[in-house]
Amino acid sequence: MATGPDLAGRVALVTGASRGIGRAVALALAEAGADVAVNYRERAAEAEAAAAAIRGLGRRALAVAADVAEGAAVTAMMARIEAGLGPIDLLVNNAGIALRRDIEALTEAEFDRTLAVNLKSAWLCTQAVLPGMRARGWGRVVNISSGAARGSGVIGVHYNASKAGMEGLTRGYAARLVQAGITVNAVAPSLIETDMVRAGSEDYARKVPMGRLGTAEEVAQAVLMVAGNAFMTGQTVQVNGGMQFT
Ligand code: NAP
Image 1 (cartoon, rainbow, N blue to C red):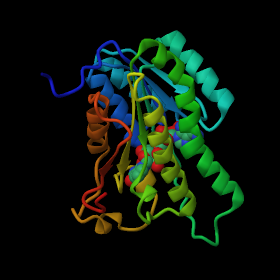
Image 2 (image 1 turned 90 degrees about the vertical axis):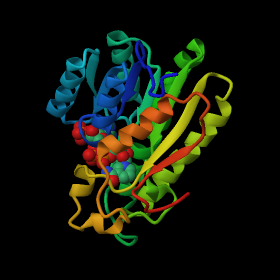
Image 3 (image 1 turned 60 degrees about the vertical axis):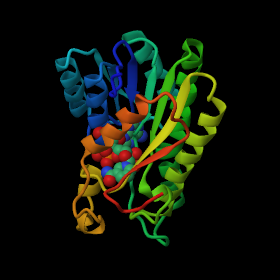
């Protein structure tokens, strides 16, 4: 029995796949055989480069701009993907923002935007793909959470709340879809070397027991594992260099 997933003939959507973790996940899914829609918010050149790399692996790819915090934008994005690649079998809710704020500095607008981009987007995208997954009796939803869902994190309480909410969404959907052939899991990275972490001035690697930042490819490995396992649902897989054990 093959241990890696065979995603040949499957269509995947990765939100926020122009760079960082999303890009690595999109490429890993393509290597496993999937055709991949590469969502992004504004960095079109990076997204087109990711799509070109996927095509270089022999898969179909489509770069699609959409602010996934907006319902109308998600509806339009889904229509474009369906027309271009076909119905979505595998959804990775990865798009996220990390506005670093102390308790006193956080504004209502920043709280709302963080919850909309990090949490509401996952609900919007999941709702959009579920009818098709149900009809075909197969689906995989993977939510990119964070160690901040359960631990203190380094960004702020708004970010903690958005990621804890994502894990609640994961378990809630998983329980309700358990007989539909659709699994819903979360992968929770901590301190991965991407623009999000590079933007901070701190030496984050010192916080990691393994003494280094993780790589986006190490997160992608966990996403592939979850996508390939039909008996695993409602779980959160931590990828964190030993920062936390849950
Ligand atoms: P990143 O390098 O900052 O990349 C963020 C990606 O999300 C980009 O592709 C960006 O698109 C996209 N994006 C942001 N807002 C969006 C929106 N409203 N609609 C659509 N796309 C949007 O981040 P990353 O480090 O790879 O993080 C990816 C995910 O992992 C996030 O959910 C983050 O919270 C989570 N995470 C990261 C770490 C870490 O250590 N890096 C740890 C825990 C969890 P553009 O390029 O067009 O701006």
